[in-house]
Length: 50
Image (cartoon, rainbow, N blue to C red; front, top):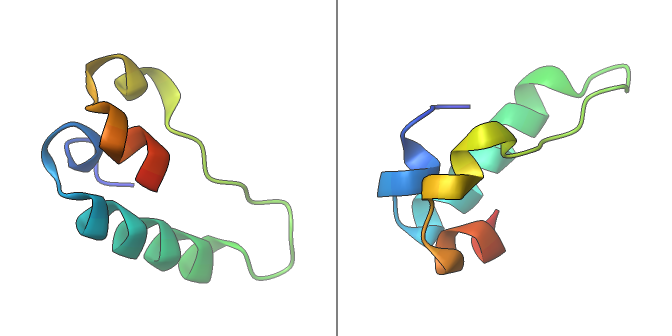
């Protein structure tokens, strides 16, 4: 996931990036998306979009 998107992207940007990551990495299972440490700097609406 793009490291700056959670803090600086729009909720729409975040939804699209999560979809892209899941599509790219989920084949075969075992992948889950998580915000990591960047959640501390993210606006609340972006965290909810994630």
